[in-house]
Amino acid sequence: MLCNLARDAMAAIETENPGRFTWTMLDASTRDGVKRLQELRPAAGRQIPVPGVLMDGEIVFDNIPEMEEFSEWLAGQTGV
Image (cartoon, rainbow, N blue to C red; front, side, top):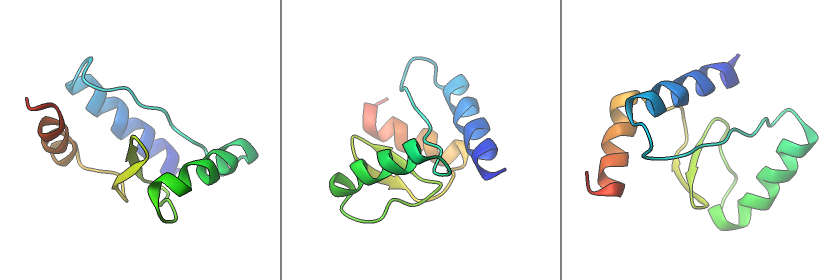
């Protein structure tokens, strides 16, 4: 259920910010998802929260961000 909420939240944010970012979702309940999380952990420097948002290996949200919160963060990253 939480994965569906995260997916829907990110899809809504993407709709509000077309072409400004791309995203992928890892399913931590699968072997491949767990393996990918383990691969990302060294760059993150700590256990990766689920749900969480990473950018270039850095944890930027350890929850599902509200659309406004994510949009403000994204504006700060892109200078828009």
